[in-house]
Length: 95
Image (cartoon, rainbow, N blue to C red; front, side):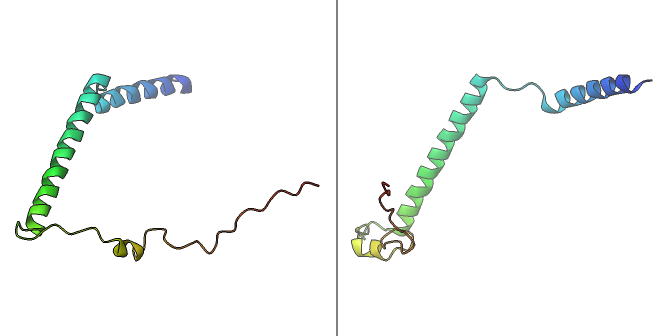
């Protein structure tokens, strides 16, 4: 056999193998339905987890913690201090 014939047979075999592995792709409607179900389940799971954490950490006899602006000043992730590396841009030289 010649090289082009072997190449064509090899390509055909790989195409069949790939179709067996991947199968038929789902339609767009099925993909959207699966994503909506997953999003709904994730929202419900997050809401349930949040409610159980709130119920376990704050008994009914204690009021919820108040907002304290002093704590925000010392928060390391917030940009509360000016950046020492920032250099403002100058005006263009109109020569």
